[in-house]
Length: 327
Image: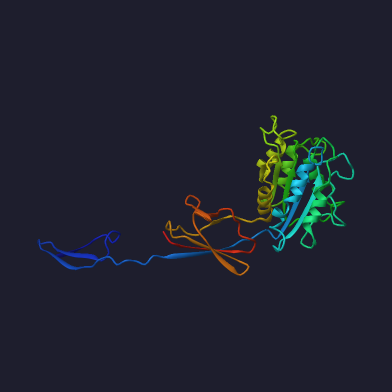
Protein backbone atom coordinates (compact mmCIF):
# COMPACT_ATOMS: atom_id res chain seq x y z
CA UNK A 1 0.00 0.00 0.00
CA UNK A 2 1.23 3.49 -0.86
CA UNK A 3 0.42 6.67 1.10
CA UNK A 4 1.00 10.21 -0.18
CA UNK A 5 2.46 12.85 2.14
CA UNK A 6 2.35 16.55 1.11
CA UNK A 7 4.91 19.04 2.46
CA UNK A 8 3.54 22.37 3.62
CA UNK A 9 3.70 24.71 0.65
CA UNK A 10 3.96 27.69 3.06
CA UNK A 11 7.62 26.79 3.42
CA UNK A 12 8.38 24.74 0.26
CA UNK A 13 6.85 25.04 -3.17
CA UNK A 14 6.40 21.88 -5.29
CA UNK A 15 7.59 19.31 -2.70
CA UNK A 16 5.57 16.09 -3.23
CA UNK A 17 6.85 12.70 -2.04
CA UNK A 18 5.41 9.13 -2.03
CA UNK A 19 6.04 6.71 0.77
CA UNK A 20 5.69 2.93 0.53
CA UNK A 21 4.33 1.84 3.88
CA UNK A 22 6.20 -1.41 3.36
CA UNK A 23 9.32 0.61 4.04
CA UNK A 24 10.68 1.95 0.72
CA UNK A 25 10.50 5.69 0.01
CA UNK A 26 10.22 6.84 -3.61
CA UNK A 27 10.41 10.49 -4.71
CA UNK A 28 7.83 11.09 -7.38
CA UNK A 29 8.95 14.73 -8.13
CA UNK A 30 10.54 17.65 -6.37
CA UNK A 31 10.76 21.18 -7.77
CA UNK A 32 12.46 24.29 -6.43
CA UNK A 33 10.51 27.45 -5.49
CA UNK A 34 10.30 29.94 -8.33
CA UNK A 35 11.12 33.63 -7.65
CA UNK A 36 8.08 35.91 -7.66
CA UNK A 37 8.30 39.37 -9.22
CA UNK A 38 7.62 42.09 -6.62
CA UNK A 39 4.29 43.90 -6.86
CA UNK A 40 4.22 47.68 -7.09
CA UNK A 41 1.63 50.25 -6.11
CA UNK A 42 1.02 53.77 -7.42
CA UNK A 43 -1.01 56.20 -5.31
CA UNK A 44 -2.22 59.37 -7.03
CA UNK A 45 -3.54 62.02 -4.66
CA UNK A 46 -4.80 65.51 -5.49
CA UNK A 47 -4.14 68.46 -3.23
CA UNK A 48 -7.73 69.38 -2.51
CA UNK A 49 -8.94 72.42 -0.63
CA UNK A 50 -12.26 73.61 0.70
CA UNK A 51 -13.91 75.42 -2.19
CA UNK A 52 -15.05 78.34 -0.02
CA UNK A 53 -13.04 79.86 2.85
CA UNK A 54 -13.85 82.71 5.24
CA UNK A 55 -10.94 84.17 7.24
CA UNK A 56 -11.52 86.68 10.04
CA UNK A 57 -8.51 88.57 11.39
CA UNK A 58 -9.05 90.04 14.86
CA UNK A 59 -6.30 92.64 15.37
CA UNK A 60 -5.47 94.46 18.59
CA UNK A 61 -5.46 98.22 17.97
CA UNK A 62 -4.43 99.35 21.45
CA UNK A 63 -1.45 101.58 22.26
CA UNK A 64 1.37 99.01 22.01
CA UNK A 65 0.38 97.37 18.74
CA UNK A 66 1.60 99.73 16.02
CA UNK A 67 4.81 97.78 15.25
CA UNK A 68 2.96 94.46 15.22
CA UNK A 69 0.40 95.82 12.76
CA UNK A 70 3.24 96.98 10.49
CA UNK A 71 4.98 93.58 10.68
CA UNK A 72 1.72 91.81 9.86
CA UNK A 73 0.99 93.99 6.84
CA UNK A 74 4.59 93.84 5.57
CA UNK A 75 4.59 90.02 5.53
CA UNK A 76 1.00 89.43 4.49
CA UNK A 77 2.07 88.22 1.05
CA UNK A 78 3.24 84.98 2.74
CA UNK A 79 -0.40 84.38 3.76
CA UNK A 80 -2.05 85.45 0.52
CA UNK A 81 0.29 83.30 -1.59
CA UNK A 82 -2.00 80.34 -0.85
CA UNK A 83 -5.12 82.20 -1.98
CA UNK A 84 -4.30 84.34 -4.99
CA UNK A 85 -4.72 82.45 -8.28
CA UNK A 86 -5.64 79.30 -6.32
CA UNK A 87 -9.20 78.89 -7.55
CA UNK A 88 -10.47 79.25 -3.97
CA UNK A 89 -13.59 81.26 -3.24
CA UNK A 90 -12.30 83.24 -0.27
CA UNK A 91 -13.32 86.09 2.00
CA UNK A 92 -10.66 87.77 4.16
CA UNK A 93 -11.96 90.31 6.67
CA UNK A 94 -10.54 92.35 9.54
CA UNK A 95 -12.00 93.60 12.83
CA UNK A 96 -10.29 95.29 15.77
CA UNK A 97 -10.40 94.28 19.43
CA UNK A 98 -12.06 97.62 20.29
CA UNK A 99 -15.64 97.08 21.38
CA UNK A 100 -15.97 100.58 22.89
CA UNK A 101 -15.79 102.59 19.66
CA UNK A 102 -19.07 102.20 17.72
CA UNK A 103 -17.15 102.57 14.45
CA UNK A 104 -15.26 99.35 15.36
CA UNK A 105 -17.27 97.05 17.70
CA UNK A 106 -17.24 93.99 15.44
CA UNK A 107 -17.61 95.92 12.19
CA UNK A 108 -15.45 94.74 9.30
CA UNK A 109 -12.79 97.27 8.35
CA UNK A 110 -13.12 98.76 4.87
CA UNK A 111 -10.63 99.38 2.09
CA UNK A 112 -12.23 101.60 -0.50
CA UNK A 113 -15.79 100.38 -0.81
CA UNK A 114 -14.99 96.76 0.11
CA UNK A 115 -15.45 95.25 3.55
CA UNK A 116 -13.48 92.13 2.77
CA UNK A 117 -10.93 90.82 0.30
CA UNK A 118 -11.96 88.17 -2.21
CA UNK A 119 -10.75 86.68 -5.50
CA UNK A 120 -12.03 89.76 -7.35
CA UNK A 121 -9.91 92.19 -5.31
CA UNK A 122 -7.43 93.95 -7.59
CA UNK A 123 -4.70 94.55 -4.98
CA UNK A 124 -5.38 92.37 -1.90
CA UNK A 125 -2.06 93.20 -0.22
CA UNK A 126 -2.67 96.95 -0.33
CA UNK A 127 -6.27 96.51 0.82
CA UNK A 128 -5.25 94.32 3.74
CA UNK A 129 -2.61 96.84 4.80
CA UNK A 130 -5.27 99.55 4.85
CA UNK A 131 -7.62 97.33 6.86
CA UNK A 132 -5.04 96.00 9.34
CA UNK A 133 -2.86 99.05 9.94
CA UNK A 134 -5.65 100.86 11.75
CA UNK A 135 -3.48 102.66 14.30
CA UNK A 136 -2.94 102.13 18.01
CA UNK A 137 -5.54 104.38 19.58
CA UNK A 138 -8.15 101.74 20.36
CA UNK A 139 -9.49 100.68 23.73
CA UNK A 140 -6.94 99.34 26.22
CA UNK A 141 -9.53 96.75 27.29
CA UNK A 142 -9.13 94.37 24.35
CA UNK A 143 -12.15 92.22 23.61
CA UNK A 144 -11.10 89.96 20.75
CA UNK A 145 -13.61 87.22 21.53
CA UNK A 146 -16.45 89.74 21.74
CA UNK A 147 -15.37 91.38 18.49
CA UNK A 148 -15.23 88.03 16.67
CA UNK A 149 -18.64 86.95 17.97
CA UNK A 150 -20.21 90.31 17.14
CA UNK A 151 -18.74 90.25 13.64
CA UNK A 152 -19.84 86.69 12.91
CA UNK A 153 -23.19 86.53 14.66
CA UNK A 154 -24.60 89.83 15.96
CA UNK A 155 -23.82 91.74 12.74
CA UNK A 156 -24.02 88.71 10.45
CA UNK A 157 -27.16 89.89 8.67
CA UNK A 158 -26.55 93.57 9.35
CA UNK A 159 -23.34 95.53 8.76
CA UNK A 160 -21.27 92.42 7.89
CA UNK A 161 -23.92 90.76 5.74
CA UNK A 162 -22.47 88.37 3.16
CA UNK A 163 -19.11 87.78 4.83
CA UNK A 164 -19.83 84.53 6.72
CA UNK A 165 -21.19 81.77 4.47
CA UNK A 166 -22.85 78.49 5.36
CA UNK A 167 -20.81 76.39 2.93
CA UNK A 168 -17.42 77.93 3.73
CA UNK A 169 -14.83 76.89 6.25
CA UNK A 170 -14.08 79.51 8.91
CA UNK A 171 -10.68 80.50 10.29
CA UNK A 172 -10.34 83.12 13.03
CA UNK A 173 -6.88 84.59 13.69
CA UNK A 174 -6.24 86.85 16.69
CA UNK A 175 -3.21 89.17 16.84
CA UNK A 176 -2.84 90.70 20.31
CA UNK A 177 -0.30 91.39 23.05
CA UNK A 178 -2.97 91.30 25.78
CA UNK A 179 -5.40 88.69 27.01
CA UNK A 180 -9.10 88.80 26.17
CA UNK A 181 -11.29 91.02 28.36
CA UNK A 182 -14.70 90.27 26.86
CA UNK A 183 -17.51 90.66 29.36
CA UNK A 184 -19.81 87.69 29.90
CA UNK A 185 -22.78 89.88 28.96
CA UNK A 186 -21.43 89.85 25.39
CA UNK A 187 -20.42 86.19 25.43
CA UNK A 188 -18.45 84.03 27.87
CA UNK A 189 -15.43 81.97 26.92
CA UNK A 190 -17.41 78.74 27.32
CA UNK A 191 -20.31 80.05 25.24
CA UNK A 192 -17.97 81.17 22.47
CA UNK A 193 -16.28 77.76 22.43
CA UNK A 194 -19.68 76.05 22.10
CA UNK A 195 -20.70 78.54 19.42
CA UNK A 196 -17.67 77.71 17.26
CA UNK A 197 -17.92 73.97 17.82
CA UNK A 198 -21.54 73.99 16.68
CA UNK A 199 -21.26 76.57 13.91
CA UNK A 200 -20.49 74.03 11.16
CA UNK A 201 -21.55 70.43 10.65
CA UNK A 202 -17.89 69.47 10.28
CA UNK A 203 -16.02 70.87 13.28
CA UNK A 204 -12.69 70.50 11.47
CA UNK A 205 -13.69 73.31 9.10
CA UNK A 206 -13.47 75.85 11.95
CA UNK A 207 -10.16 76.92 13.51
CA UNK A 208 -9.06 79.56 16.00
CA UNK A 209 -5.41 80.65 15.84
CA UNK A 210 -3.68 82.95 18.32
CA UNK A 211 -0.58 85.07 17.74
CA UNK A 212 -0.23 86.32 21.30
CA UNK A 213 2.11 86.57 24.27
CA UNK A 214 3.03 83.17 25.66
CA UNK A 215 2.87 82.22 29.33
CA UNK A 216 6.47 83.21 30.14
CA UNK A 217 6.54 86.20 27.83
CA UNK A 218 6.52 89.22 30.05
CA UNK A 219 9.47 89.15 32.44
CA UNK A 220 11.47 92.16 31.32
CA UNK A 221 11.96 91.16 27.68
CA UNK A 222 10.72 93.25 24.76
CA UNK A 223 7.21 91.88 25.17
CA UNK A 224 4.53 94.18 26.49
CA UNK A 225 1.18 93.26 27.91
CA UNK A 226 0.29 89.89 29.36
CA UNK A 227 -0.07 86.27 28.24
CA UNK A 228 -2.98 85.58 25.88
CA UNK A 229 -4.28 82.77 28.08
CA UNK A 230 -7.91 82.90 26.94
CA UNK A 231 -6.96 82.98 23.26
CA UNK A 232 -4.53 80.08 23.62
CA UNK A 233 -7.19 78.04 25.42
CA UNK A 234 -9.55 78.61 22.49
CA UNK A 235 -6.85 77.44 20.10
CA UNK A 236 -6.47 74.24 22.13
CA UNK A 237 -10.24 73.69 22.30
CA UNK A 238 -11.08 74.53 18.68
CA UNK A 239 -7.83 73.77 16.87
CA UNK A 240 -5.45 76.15 15.15
CA UNK A 241 -1.95 77.61 15.37
CA UNK A 242 -0.29 79.20 18.39
CA UNK A 243 2.60 81.57 17.78
CA UNK A 244 4.44 84.07 20.02
CA UNK A 245 3.75 87.65 19.00
CA UNK A 246 7.29 88.51 20.17
CA UNK A 247 8.77 86.43 17.34
CA UNK A 248 10.40 88.38 14.54
CA UNK A 249 9.63 85.61 12.04
CA UNK A 250 6.27 86.86 10.80
CA UNK A 251 6.79 85.34 7.38
CA UNK A 252 6.78 81.78 8.74
CA UNK A 253 3.68 82.12 10.88
CA UNK A 254 1.77 83.82 8.07
CA UNK A 255 2.79 81.03 5.71
CA UNK A 256 1.55 78.41 8.20
CA UNK A 257 -1.69 80.32 8.75
CA UNK A 258 -2.17 80.53 4.99
CA UNK A 259 -1.66 76.79 4.59
CA UNK A 260 -4.13 76.09 7.40
CA UNK A 261 -6.80 78.48 6.13
CA UNK A 262 -6.49 77.31 2.53
CA UNK A 263 -6.99 73.72 3.70
CA UNK A 264 -3.71 72.48 2.21
CA UNK A 265 -1.96 69.34 3.43
CA UNK A 266 1.69 68.45 3.77
CA UNK A 267 1.08 64.84 4.85
CA UNK A 268 -0.27 62.15 2.51
CA UNK A 269 -1.23 58.60 3.48
CA UNK A 270 -0.32 55.52 1.44
CA UNK A 271 -3.01 53.04 0.47
CA UNK A 272 -0.79 49.97 1.04
CA UNK A 273 2.27 49.07 3.11
CA UNK A 274 5.54 49.76 1.26
CA UNK A 275 8.92 48.08 1.32
CA UNK A 276 11.15 50.60 3.05
CA UNK A 277 13.53 52.36 0.70
CA UNK A 278 11.41 51.78 -2.43
CA UNK A 279 9.19 54.86 -2.21
CA UNK A 280 9.48 57.51 -4.92
CA UNK A 281 7.51 60.75 -4.97
CA UNK A 282 6.67 63.08 -7.84
CA UNK A 283 4.49 66.21 -7.79
CA UNK A 284 2.82 67.72 -10.84
CA UNK A 285 1.97 71.42 -10.57
CA UNK A 286 0.86 73.62 -13.46
CA UNK A 287 1.78 70.89 -15.93
CA UNK A 288 5.35 70.45 -14.64
CA UNK A 289 6.45 67.27 -12.82
CA UNK A 290 9.18 67.40 -10.17
CA UNK A 291 10.73 64.49 -8.27
CA UNK A 292 11.19 64.85 -4.52
CA UNK A 293 13.64 62.80 -2.48
CA UNK A 294 13.37 61.03 0.87
CA UNK A 295 15.30 62.56 3.73
CA UNK A 296 15.71 65.87 1.95
CA UNK A 297 12.27 66.76 0.63
CA UNK A 298 10.02 64.35 2.53
CA UNK A 299 10.05 61.74 5.30
CA UNK A 300 8.17 58.46 5.66
CA UNK A 301 6.40 57.73 8.95
CA UNK A 302 6.06 53.96 9.33
CA UNK A 303 3.61 54.18 12.24
CA UNK A 304 1.24 56.41 10.22
CA UNK A 305 2.09 54.91 6.81
CA UNK A 306 2.40 58.41 5.38
CA UNK A 307 4.86 60.75 3.73
CA UNK A 308 5.28 64.31 4.98
CA UNK A 309 6.93 67.03 2.93
CA UNK A 310 9.69 69.10 4.58
CA UNK A 311 9.53 72.86 4.14
CA UNK A 312 7.11 72.58 1.23
CA UNK A 313 3.39 72.15 0.69
CA UNK A 314 1.96 71.18 -2.72
CA UNK A 315 -0.15 73.92 -4.21
CA UNK A 316 -3.93 73.64 -4.72
CA UNK A 317 -4.90 71.06 -7.38
CA UNK A 318 -1.36 69.63 -7.51
CA UNK A 319 -1.12 65.86 -8.09
CA UNK A 320 1.13 63.82 -5.79
CA UNK A 321 2.24 60.46 -7.24
CA UNK A 322 3.74 57.94 -4.81
CA UNK A 323 5.23 54.69 -6.20
CA UNK A 324 6.51 51.86 -4.04
CA UNK A 325 7.05 48.13 -3.83
CA UNK A 326 4.37 46.34 -1.85
CA UNK A 327 5.42 44.77 1.42
